[in-house]
Length: 391
Image (cartoon, rainbow, N blue to C red; front, side, top):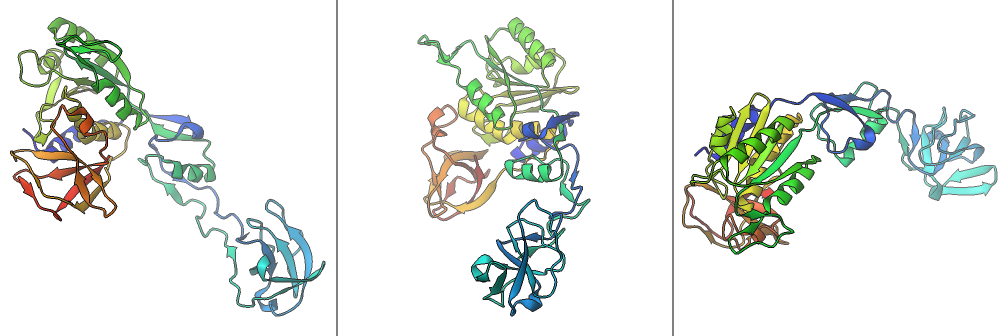
């Protein structure tokens, strides 16, 4: 069994970044930049009023000021501001030449329709200076940035109506197991519903990847080879669930090898999720995940998500924290790194949830995080710090 971090690095090292493509700004969310984005102009592009008020010279703040014009956002000033002059100005408007101060409208005493006085001579300048946010040519977003909502205004500000991003991988999902039926079917006493595939499709959607569900394959060698071969030819990555352990009907490893795939990783020292296969043939990849839903969920988060991100040119980094447990915790075996479900309480403490193992489907339903119990550790005490991985 390979340790978690060793297995992850081996898997990531196999990823070859996919080619880039151009997409519209409106469809760039959760795509990965294939090039750095620089701004083509200063921001702000002019000295901009930060307040509704009056633009004038600071040295004239003690004096009665003559109003020469009103400047709203989007209007070019018509006059320079001279001695004892001012312009009424709106937030975001261009500060006229000659003015080095904008006093707030709340600090203005209107004498008549053409004259005003500032009642706060200690006012701030209230001007956003040209280029103080970014200057022409500055790098706004580096390549490999996973684009989030907060990045979109930067792209728009840089004039990017289209952006160059890495192609998303084509990913297929197949569930293997003679005992499986689809969710809409009523299982016989010896059958169970396929719960893994919908879970994995949702996990793919979190990466903005629309997975291709290819159905259930029975534990039959010929059928496995035929359907797995087709799925691998049509997609960059195939995710299988079930059939990767050591039982007589766990046929996935042999099937992949018969198709010419090299088994890169086989079994990892995590709990739950020990049985797992990662295989490669050229630029075609396959994950064989556990048939147990909790295991497959955790395996995807630990291994498949970072790998898919790497294919898209993005170094995935999960949100991790060190937080204290709010209770004692123990387990019987310590040969593997345990990932246990938990919630975080109002005191920022880790509260373990009831968890019966890899087949306990609803053990994850209320979980906010997974916390780690290292190899060789059987007991943790109330207040011990644990590494927490946000879900």
